[in-house]
Image (tube, rainbow, N blue to C red; front, side):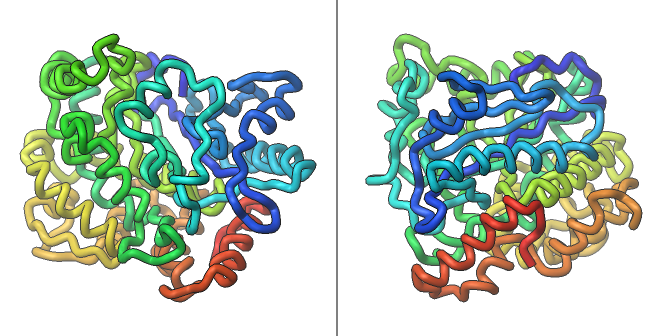
Length: 410
């Protein structure tokens, strides 16, 4: 999202979806984002506006992003709008025998040889590459959904930040879609997040523990998150090219430039219907916590970052089978007991969200995810954990069809 929100909490939403461009037959990555954007716009550009949605480039030339340009007051119409744009992009790509691929990681891409940075990278991308070396899975082989939620003033920021912080560790139980890397399954349903967790090890304060610490205000956030980050990277970036709040690589970051918090932990799914259903459930759960339906703000903020981080690691590995075993954390979510499977926890949160009625537009997709597992589990069920390249290609070709046709992968 580039537009400024200037909206109270839950008055508008911004969604960003990233997709990889691949060869239609072999599914090898195709670094032709510039050609796609040119075909959509009719001229050379890095940004294309098409009605309420827009396309843009990313760090690497085989990934593009589509987003709603200004905040939308409701998510309900976005699945169809995003699907229309994906169809339009695939029509242009068909002319060069390419297509868009969903999921959060290409299953066999070799970033050392396949990475091509955006041609007109500019100083920001060049600085990132110089400091972190962007020819790795965590930089060039990842696709996510970003969910932007607005706030108005410090009081709303504090409550929204506290609520989002509690939901982050549970995201992979719904959204993990990256079980393969280098052609093999490496024991994580959400391999993208395992890579994302470690991309900034050279500057540890940039990503922290992925789960952000409690924050009470913009000034508090600036002092405890932004200032240490800027100080640590200064020696590597003396010109201050990266001295902006978007340098923050936590799982949710404050974007004071547009008065929103951006959630970054959600793997992109097989079609926008699944993406937006997950986004809607996340919003409903965050909103219930924001309203202190199950716990006070003080109780929410008292949950240790390390507790949330340990839960995140469990759901990154095991998705819906990850175990949530901190009783105080469960109580803040309105759930009793000492230990609970993450998938079962989400079932209870759906029922408690206030929006989880059978008639909710997003409920069928969420019910399918909760009954059959996150996309990564469904992919592994289709491929087997030791799939060869031909089997991977067949399954991921079907996933590309799901994206093109706007249907879920079952």
